Length: 398
Figure 1 (cartoon, rainbow, N blue to C red):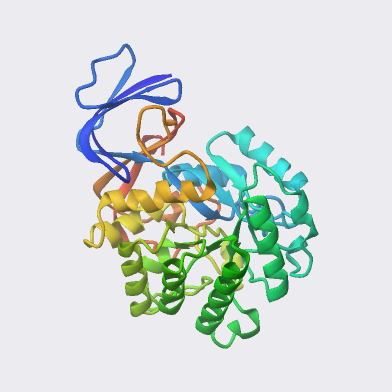
Figure 2 (cartoon, helix red, strand yellow):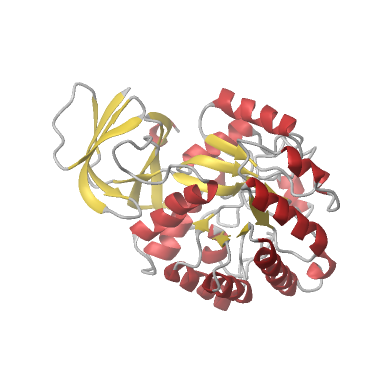
């Protein structure tokens, strides 16, 4: 397939200009101004932004075991609708993903659906039970990360040994920073304590520690100091934690925080302390939400929430947003994605940053319609998503 995109505003982490992109055989063949006409389909993108498609380090597609909430197909369609072509799947499925057999089954499903690239996390502890890590010895490609997301690893000794194994195997260990013994009484302290602990274990082990869904001022301050000390630590922030405060009543874990926390997270993004935006896409049925299940179906609104709260409000420019939604997440996974250049895979997203639209969860491709932002008017509508030059989402098809 060949495609020539003309007159686009081309934006990635390092460039922002009006130009053209020529795609051939799934790859970017030319980038520049006034590319000569080709014998192929031409898309005039005048007034429209073309960026590298997004990479999400943290999603829950619920397969196996919870497919009534989401499955690989619905999750992939939701990702494509949100401008994502690469996702990292959490391990808290049923059964938990603690073996390469389950990884293989999930990867087969992803390949059969064929809309996005996906990586499957393996649990830090076997069965996510918190006390056994021998299964880590058998972990191999394509696994990039391990995580017990949904709960913290309570034992410091187990977490240290897991980090040491991950260091030896070149795996990223993702921390859900929550001390469950106190989270019911003080979730703020629960996050802060576990963040501090895991940073100390990172210092001891030398592993690549990735802190998930950082939400408090104190936690981001700890991470800033750890980075200044040269620790191998990266971190992510979820769109809802920078778009909304605790004035919005909605159950999510970690919870929505105070204004000063949001301000600290945004300041950390501007300073380069935050490496990635990650959605923590957590679809649920309406019945499960009524019963108290925490989480937001967020992958389809991620760009709009971030563009509105960060770029439209003047905190960062579009290049910086591309950096933390595309380039840096890809680097954390160790994959060559997230930029626009000759020889890059043509994973692209076409967005209209001037389009102010109302969030309507009934239009979500995800099975989960759970969002506190229904009815909010936001900027930055995803129009088209390309995976290796192939259109995997087009808003006109809705």
